[in-house]
Length: 418
Image (cartoon, rainbow, N blue to C red):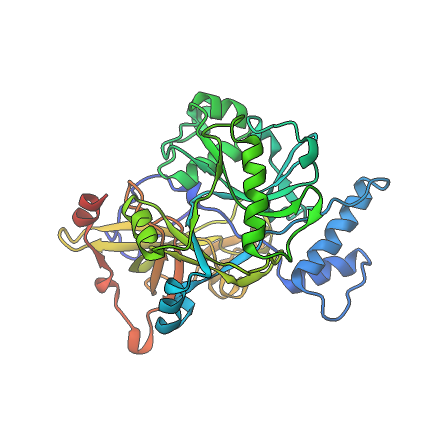
């Protein structure tokens, strides 16, 4: 990784940020089409990006396992934001008894395939075979005898009871101590030895059930939320006594929803998800029948560095930057600190700001990129005052322009509020 400050004394690095540099290297539509053509896979008009990924997944699967059926892929439903609604629409939803609210957790979305050999798959797809990653090894503690529930498919999230998970006893010098619950869940699931990591940290993981896609093998995605909720409750009641404090059914209510949400926030939670009583489950698509509402931190920050692509990755091969580093000035001391690393950049933007070496490898970002000011949003300030889940909200240009010197924040106040 590399970074270059805007000015020599502009900021100081708080800690190693390797665990925060999660790269978004999914192929875009044109790249998918090219890969399909290289493999003589028909590209038909109107194919969505997900359709192309599914076609490639089937192709690579049949190459490896010609006599086995292609596994069914369950892409979890994506939810919209309450903030996209007008203030009047938002207020109406808060008051409408046909809308329920559940706690929004901060973990990893995991689909549970209930079968004699349980399978747990991630939301993201592999860039090699386009199948969701199977992380069943990390769920060695969730293995009920399925019985009549064989064929059930659950949509849920794995969360961690601790934010400070230590992987050093297992991973040695490459290990780390995480500083928020999302990092902890990721470390526990993605470790090279998730069994040892979890056992060394007092078994911190829990599986929270949000929805149900298949009920004893039956497709229930077209049934309303309240009916799916009944199926989910049946499943939970069948196994809750076997896995106390490990298997959780997310709470839901349609009474005093704002009070419910505010209590979640006051307790340090991320927020809530509003769910329409008659809403259907739309696999792999964004729905307006479920709306997330959550707290977020907003800060203006200046580009002061970059995240180099991981060696051998697609971005590395294309000589493109992996992410940008941002800094702010402490309003009291005038010192600069790195506050965020953002990897969620579009391919076009990466191309615009990346400079390559003569061999085509990534070298730097353009000098014009250093010093650009953006408004960032994130979930919360981590214990080292690094913005978690940071993303770019907008560029500070035109009437909204700000200078680097206006990128200030109050470190003392943030620490006091933690």
